[in-house]
Image 1 (spheres, rainbow, N blue to C red):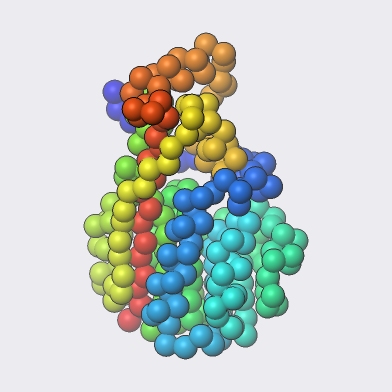
Image 2 (spheres, one colour; image 1 turned 45 degrees about the horizontal axis):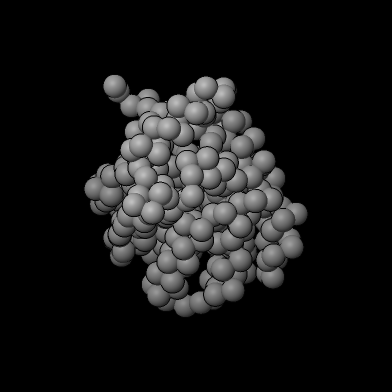
Amino acid sequence: MELALKLIEKQRIRQHFDKALDSYDEHAWIQEKINRKLLSHITARLPTSSLESVLELGCGTGQLSEGLQQHIHANYWMFNDLCDVKERLKKRLSQPFAFYCGDAEQFPFNRSYDLIVSASAVQWFHHQSLFIEHCKKGLKRNGLLAIATFGQENLYEIRALTNIGLVYPKLSDWKKWLQDDFELLYAETITEELYFPTPFDVLKHLKKTGVTATGQGTWTKQKLQIFIDRYQRCFSLSDKQVRLTYQPLWIIARYK
């Protein structure tokens, strides 16, 4: 059966992440690890910890935003998200910032930035191949572009059972999109498995991190039971737990 690779309506994405804002940080364990690793590689490649301007696209609850401000001083910070998280950011950020609520793919570049960052967001974009071109409009020469997203094996179990999934470009695709105008400084993809007591706990985890925006229609009792039975049968471990696969992908490149 052909996999239904979906372009999700931005309004639907916003609604699901709005609902998950209060629970996200507590349950987004993989995203937190992704953010820590991205941050360490960013700071290792910056010529200085003092920058003129920094932009984060798809900042969410501000988990990475807080880390960025703890390690970098900038005269101008701009944070963007599809959800209106400005008040949340005010509670956790120490440096003054501007906020733009809207679609990151359509972000209006009114200035140039030394650093553009996006973590766990671009997989929701409709035109990932054009994202690099869009960032070039707002990135200074020798500025850094830092991206954390996911590879094709991400949430493999969900895709295998529901036949629904996001479009995840390969690392080679990202390298190809960068090759003409960027110097690739760092690129890596790894596979991480999380373990849960039951398939139902997998679904709760995904819901609390907003990932169910991919949609599975209405979960009837029968449909849910079929999913749980199949998940248990296909992806259970010897200790009766079940697995969920993440495949994070990191890229840092310098604009030539």
